[in-house]
Amino acid sequence: MSKGREGSAAGGGAAAVLMRYLREQNRPYSAQDAFGNLQREHGLSKAAVVKALEQLAQQGRVREKAYGKQKIYFADQEQLPAASDAELRGLDGQIAALSAKVQALQQSCRQMEAGDSMTTPEMAKELRELKKNCRSYTEKLERIKSATSCVSPEEKEKVCSEQQLYCREWRRRKRMATELLDAILEGYPKSKKQFFEEVGIETDEDHNVTLPTAV
Image 1: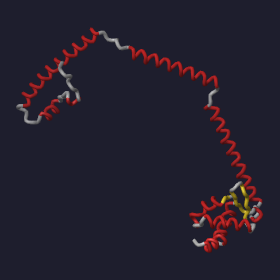
Image 2 (image 1 turned 30 degrees about the vertical axis):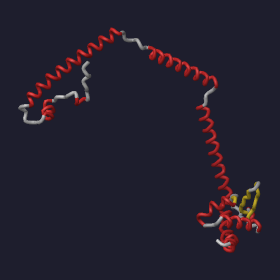
Image 3 (image 1 turned 90 degrees about the horizontal axis):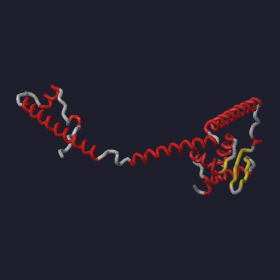
């Protein structure tokens, strides 16, 4: 946008838009805030917003206040229409309702804080219980770690021998059953799988059972 067109927008359209916005909102805005709120809807540049606000302030149509390096602008309250008694009563009612809501929320927060907080003696007692439990679990863990000789060599040898005996018997019986089934299947008209399903035979493989390797 050229300087001539931008100056025209600031003095005309931008000023009208900002004047109407400040009167409707009736709250202070910086030039940056006004630009951010109006740029999308009205397509105003920041330079146009700044220039229009400065011109409106010079003309006395809006008020200007400086806070450090930042300036804020707001509608001149004397130029706004006076509120009627009904509007004032309505505002008083809204203020009273909001005040009651704030008090209720504050009370609720105090109750929640009182319910969740613990006194110093209570915290000390809780800490002692936690330390006691921690010691108990630590001692239990140490006992488990140190229990490396619970089974004697004789007991271990007995268990291993029994396992070998049972595994040999398992293989012998499985071999006998396989030979018997193979003899039956020679004259059976259907498949081996169908025969097993009809008779109700379940194999080791059906249950993912693996016979231990012979020792």
